[in-house]
Image (cartoon, rainbow, N blue to C red; front, side, top):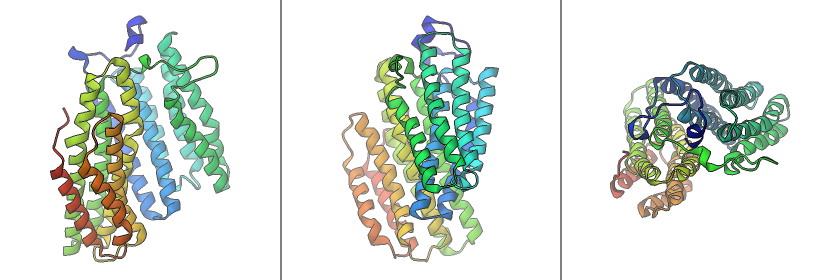
Length: 391
């Protein structure tokens, strides 16, 4: 980090030979809360499989991911094995747990808890960095990040207080919009300007590994939800067949991400300049991994619907979940490839079109049949695309 070279900063991560750094056990412990959060999001959508339920789940998923994502940026610079940073992570972990607990009634009775937990962890974490770093360019970078967090906080809290659902949506969309826009605007403030990208330098291997682990969290949730649903439903032939197909489709998603996409991003980060690494990290991981995660969550919901009722016909909502999840996932992979300037995979594009076109066609078909067709498509896609591997 350039700023660290110019001005001594406490609690920074030690860099090993070649500038690599490892994921710590504290970070893995921190991730456990987000396993629970992803589970809560899946269950929230399952409980209300409507457009309104989908909108609420999507909104809260973005907020949950944003809280995790910002913390990952911080721990790429600051050492989680130092006591002050560890204590901050414990605080963020507790706030994240409260936010996850609030998800089932996040747009109802627990809206204020969700809003305060989210805003509190963002302000507390960013405030810590400002407090422990000396005046300078790096400190100014985080002062501007903190300012944007403070700017959105009143909208979050107000949205949690109001009773009118329409007004809550208006306030919270404004708050989340500010949070999402801030990195794109590089935290511009009147009189201060933009934060320089030279202060966004990342250690690419560690940074990429952390986001890959979040993909594993989402895939793990799909496996857990499928297994739990099968256990609760009873292991009939149809349920076991649906469980097997769900496992194979999750494996295919893992293969498509880690066999093709993950390694390409890390290779590009390694070859980039210090400033370009920050830009790639922001674009690929901060933004374009969102549809990848959302797609996996939706896949888990589709799998649960089929496992719970393998011989029932899929409703329109069930068909959209079953095929829309893989489509959103593939769209995220294609967006990442586009950002890196990669030639788009023709099999991936064809599969995306087929999935979207098939949604109205499979509504009303037997769920097990749809699951089998989907799994076959994903397996063919895995075979059709050469494996690159994550290095």
